Image (cartoon, rainbow, N blue to C red):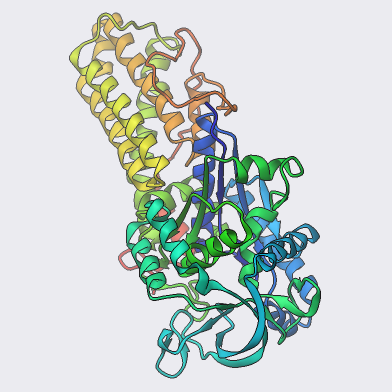
Length: 540
């Protein structure tokens, strides 16, 4: 039965161009989306841009541009980056849109009608980078923001407040009733500890700048940028709205089985504390799960313009292809943990797993044995005369597909790929042990056909299991074994479960290798183009 699934990235702040950290979140959401579509579930994948706030107003002034002109200019590189990475989002929200503004004001009114908004004076330390106030205990020595390591500013102004203090117990009750609300568990424990200390009311408007959504009925104030930004998850669907007035909101918020927000750990508190409190106040459904991934360093160092390692995804896509970069991002780091992006590890994964693993399996059978000895066609094979080696590989495929699906449901992308690569490895070992080249020389055609069919069917399964991560390469693989591209359809579960779906007699089409191996000269050339030091040491 179809289960509507809604997955979102954080909306990215447009004070600079997209980098590999943005790509990590967006690729993860795209993988989730593609997997859910493969299972036949109606799916909506949202990404977009956070375009309001003091930081944007100041950056536009530095560029001698009006804020709207500045954000219009900055939006294009994000759209281009996701196109380059084959991230097939359904919605791209910009918080400067008129529709979003209306939704923010609607949420405000619902919270105000609940009695949760009041006007008062406010004074505290403010981090422009975070666009949030900080308590003294949250600051480092010298009044520095612990995240940005920059001085905070003392701000005193008239402000509207949200009665967040009223939601300590409701939030803790929600956490208890939904033990998977925040993942991973260690992050959830941090959230619960923060709330248990007691929440204080939250300033949710500003008068010190103008670049934001005006407060309803009081345009001297603009809405706090985080209340503005978080509302994007419902405004992109046309909500909040009465039933029947916004079909996307009805399907993917009100009725969706799963709503998953993928965010970086640095903005978890906004999503796991403030956002559900706002929604509880407004009487709107709370999302199913907040997934907080870790930070990526680059070659062992934090990304920074001053270090020259602020890494955009474009040159990497140009050097390796989108699917290879997507694979590396999902393979290298356990989702939810901090990790490091290393050019050399990317090259090693490419040569070791993609070229020597999956690519070699393809070449050994499709471009060699089947082409030369079976007229390039998928042979006939039954399930009656299987040998132990055949049964073992089939059992491995079935177990791998089952386990990979469980891991993808849990957003454990690296574990799904670990399991899938166990199948790739098992298939290569199967080829080594059955020696189809020897069977061809001996004229053992029936056994040769069984062996080749078993490998080709394994490749068909792999083309589906890897499709969420490497959609283009998987469709290339399918073309080489005579299969059409995958076309996910609502209500149709395409995940492999029944052995024997590859039809005998269809023509295989050996082409250029899926993952041609790089020799030392090619590796050196690629790394030089990417400004990575010579082999033996990562760039510092």
